[in-house]
Length: 285
Image (cartoon, rainbow, N blue to C red; front, side, top):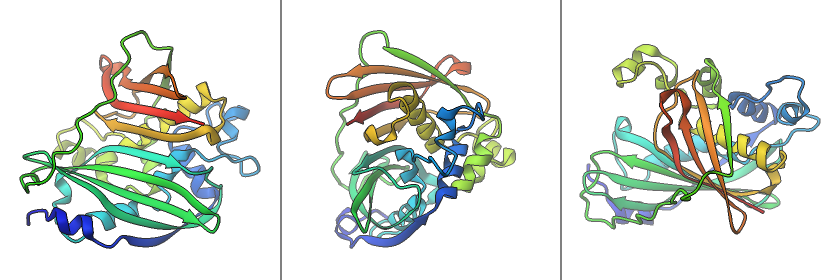
């Protein structure tokens, strides 16, 4: 069924209640590789409940899959899930995420672009608790074969990588079992765990979740540039440009820019610096 952009954009937002405890936060952080070395105080702030801080990217798993499912089932949207690719992610923080909480989450189709053969859907999910707004997530989905409905092509501006040497280069290893642990946050796609399924999809072996790479990158930047102060992160966005395999190493190049912005490029070391995250930026307070 062709996409009906007018119907999708005019649809009433869906709402749901999301709840999380310190265990959900700890599991998320473990899925990103936190806890090595296990006695490092800088790592334990992500894992011990008496001092727990929450990475802003936790917003992508704190009920995020409920919002995603509702967005793909919105009026005017009828797509084959096998044709859906996660193209990009953005999280804006209104204030620090508590280690335990409950919030009302509202999801709607914020934009729908016609790229010709394919379409790009932007799903916006906003969460608020009794004290007010918490976060806003923009999930960009690439819908193969769903273009041609006569809509706006959308913006084409990209975040250019600075034409100079990076100010800092970090390297973060991906554990062999990292995808198996990260999937416990709610993404059960067998592409990230089952070798036979991954082979059918054209991969040599299961691949890491893009949102795991996204979270690992933010953790590395927070640790190296912000002394672990998660409250300084105001806005974080990235485009998924390539896959990561468990057991590889992420090379994270950082460029410090004006207005508290840090541009980022992430590559896979073992595959000749193949780009895995581009158009990536952290904005701090």
